[in-house]
Image 1 (cartoon, rainbow, N blue to C red):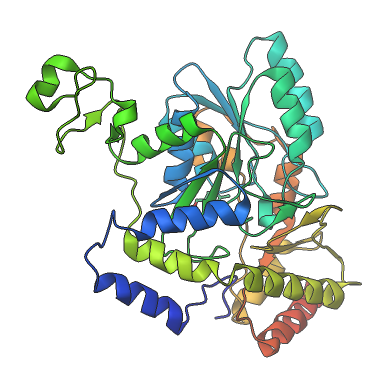
Image 2: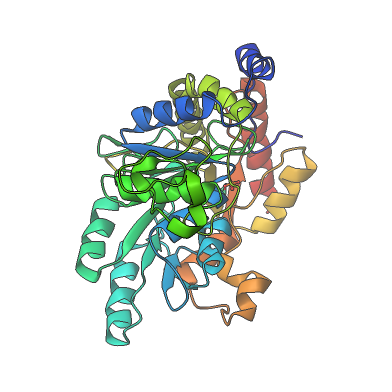
Length: 395
Ligand SMILES: *Cc1c(COP(=O)(O)O)cnc(C)c1O
């Protein structure tokens, strides 16, 4: 089968991981902070907190921004379930904003209309999670303006958009958001096997993210609360210095840490980020040319955006199921990204139903993700294009 996406692991990646295996630290050693510093520098954010998945990053991002019971988190229905589940993890309620029919990202027009409604009923969201679908940034300036007007925080789910830029600004710089989350799952642009990062420019938010990643514990003397009685004789007491064994749990956190093995893989992969994004854009450009004239809606990259092209999605008004099954039968593992989250059984039980987000539902009835990854061969590319042409002829 030709997959829709796959990782590219080279000898230098293997060597980087083996070197850690031979070193003193498999986890909580020097590679994690080195990886964090390199990611932060690459995207121009002040702080990076690396964790074991983007899902974990979304969870602690919500907690770090104070999301809890009684609050609302809004996201797009066309995303992976993790973008919405993070709100439920915190005991908050989740709602969705319909998509733009051209970019397939959260519609800013629909967001404004929904915010105006929510204001009337005093149910404004605490957090909005725009998702950079396929690797193309949402209109972050417009969403930032709305966040100021209506008083919500913004977490960018940039799981698809590692290496993308928006109006010259690298996705992840958090210029127009509070936190940005990246994923390093093997199908994404660069990988650590499993892994993710939360980026922010706010030092206090970064400190909370670090604590939440590791049991709610801090070893930073500047942040000790000096719990007194419980700290016993090792405790910092006014000016006195803490004993070497002293730490404080101040929040209820988790073990969401990434390992040094995975951080070393990430460091090695990061070296090739530009190459990967370049190659993905090259393949996307070739698809654009080869598919022009076929009865398909092709990806629209808005002026000012450079997409990371994690996904290359086309929409067909002909029988999508028949086209999909034909391509699968030909050995091409096309996919759908995504079934609308609000129509998942778990979300239906929360009260969501068909018809609530018509653009998202229309998208999900017509979309097909075609193979796109750096090592996709020209031969396989040509086979995908000819198979799609044949399938469209049948449909
Ligand atoms: C992959 C993905 C996630 C979750 O990433 P993990 O690292 O697998 O937890 C979240 N949001 C979106 C949009 C994704 O595609």
